[in-house]
Amino acid sequence: MIFAGTNGFLDPIPIEGVGNYEQEMYRFFDTRKAALLRTLADKKQFDDALKAEFTAALKEFADVYAVAKKAAA
Figure 1: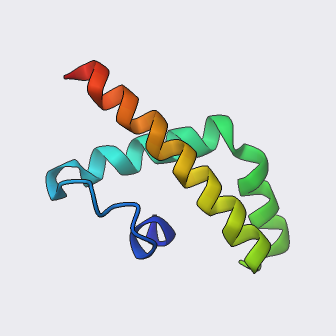
Figure 2: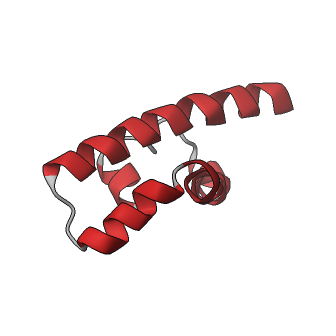
Figure 3: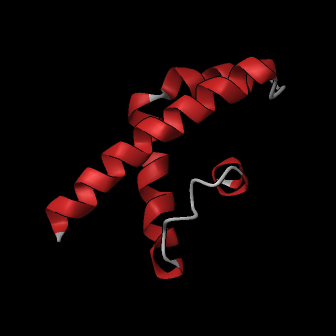
């Protein structure tokens, strides 16, 4: 979540929506990016390659989240 916030992924999210974004983001990573989370746990280091993978995953999540929010509206 800190990486998402410091890299601009929370910028379009209204403050009152951050809690929901966080819950959905964790669900997304647990279900779709579990291998990436395991890699981070194994490496215990957030190197440039891992940062790139997390950035790509957060971009994918942003698309999924936007579609879900539109469908709910």
